[in-house]
Length: 207
Image (cartoon, rainbow, N blue to C red; front, side, top):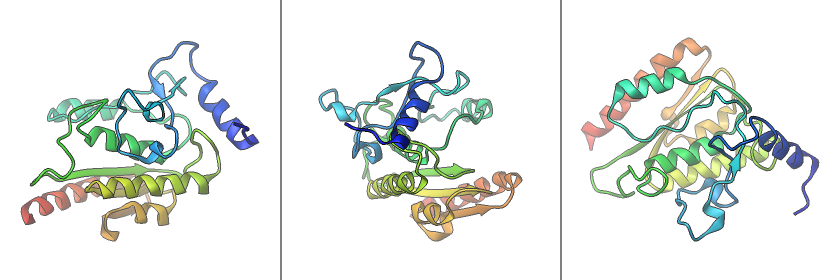
């Protein structure tokens, strides 16, 4: 495959940083699986995640579903921003966490009666880089496809824009327009998340 300059730069940035040994980071799967809830199955190579060097060794592993709220809070509090922004892979891994398949194996089957699955997407910036490009509009298109795939699986999506980011994209990603939160200050995040929790509780009571 012949790579353009932007794609080459994206690949170099993702693969050419961090330590010389693999320390757990991955990049986008081959299309169309980069926006799919289909789990790796050991037989389809494109469903596997290509190993990548980490932008920083401070990155934490993805945490699977848990009922241990203390552990979840501790994990979140250890998180630190690093590298560029790729909302698509965040949405795709959100689907993986909620999936019954690999690599987490903790979610119940999609479509299970009386079970709702929720995803909260929080971002403070524009898409800036994926496996192939640094062109924001191209990455946005993949993000929207990932959101569509998640909603097609029955996942209810809330989105939160913190000061920066594509407001149109995030509103389209949300399952409903009122599930999109546009924050002008990071200090508003706690209130927005509280509102989302109340909305989820209301959905559960209604259904």
